[in-house]
Image (cartoon, rainbow, N blue to C red; front, side, top):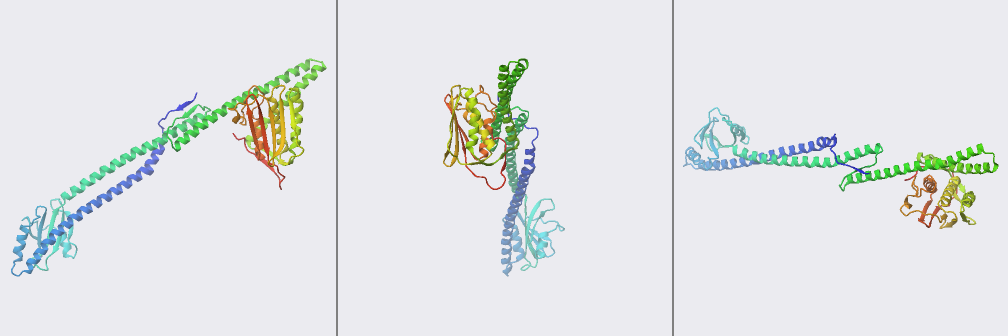
Amino acid sequence: MIKFKQQSTPKHRSIIWRWITNNLLVVILIIIVIELSFVYGIQSFYYTSARQNLTGELTSVVNLLSRYAQDSETNLSSEMRSTFESFDAKEHMELMAVNAKGRVVLTSSGFSPASDTAIPDYDSVAAGGDGYWVGRAGNGEKIMAVCMDISSFSTEYSAVRVVCSLREVDASVRSLVLITVLLCVVILLLLIFTGIFFVGSIIRPIAQVSSTAGNFAKGDFTYRIRYSGNDEIGDLCTAINHMADELSHAEDMKNEFISSVSHELRTPLTAIKGWAETIYTENDPETIHKGMTVIMGETERLSQMVEELLDFSRMQSGHFTLQKDTMDVLAELGDAVLIYMDKAARDKIRISYDEPEMLPFLYGDKNRIRQVFINIIDNAIKYSDPGGQVDIVASEENGRIVVRVSDHGCGIKASDLPKVKTKFYKPNHTRRGSGIGLAVADEIIAAHDGTLTIESEEGVGTTVTITLPPGKKPDGSQTITMQAVRP
């Protein structure tokens, strides 16, 4: 039964912490920098606007006083007092006149600051500066002051200045800053929420993969990962589930192979032991001859089976080598047919061999090619019923060497046909064999740049077609090491 791993919360959230330290902190730093830049920009904008407003009002006053000074019939001092008293913007700002000693002697409100009060904007004007100052008054209130020199047309007063409170300006700035801070917090919380959700969506399936892999390591291939996402992680989970299916299938085939090989080994060993005991106790020549015949036949079966297992082991370890040279395919095919003539006759199976006069030479390992022919012919006889026939045809087609071995036996199911060249696979468990002969044969043919194809219909028979390219021996040694059997 297949078990699906449910999504579980991992114990260690290292990816989340890496995301927090590598990404989230950077984003927070960027947001803080943007927020500070915005605060600075907003405050600069409001303060610049306030300064322009003060400068505009003060410029109007200075221009008016300059016109009064140019009129000889006008008393400048009297007009200044009248102008200060009727100053239109005195509810928002205060207009002041400073004498030559640097003291405020006239204001629009009628209240003059203490004589020791510092006037930085006036000091700036006196030093040739811009006459602008932002600071705190004696009562702690934040103010802005702009001062202009009028000593060019007045002997009693050296400058006029205008002062306003920044309470409302700062309040507006704080409101905007608060709104932007709240917006940044909302964005940050949304980022954290979506980020944790996103990282969690990666961690959960990874945790499942890790847990499932642990079960695979223990030999339990029944677990599957349940993930519905259509993304790279989904592809990974699908691949792992597919791997589990293949591993489970391979495990089943391996167990079946062990059981089959055990049975295949036990049967001839039992026959050998039984006839050996019979021969030991009997002195009848006919019985001894019959027993020795059985023992030799079963020993040959054991030898062939062990050889297949050794070849398979060499392929798995990468130590299976080919000693290639120019060879005659017909000679090796003829030897293989001759080997099985007597066996086929004993099983009441007829072998029909259509041998051409000549075939191109093949560059290959003659022992391994003969091994392939023997394996294919043995299978054809094995899966044929008494009274059946095995047809063997060799020919040259399109410049390639083609050998076909056909039987009229039980055939192979359509569902089993794609798997017959898979290691350990046996389509028919009622017939003897280890299930790796075709896998070894397919590897040998592939190492000779050829193909081995199987066509079969259940109840009709099977045809195995071997196609090999002709060739001559190239210069130099040609010892080739084959890799493991392909799945």
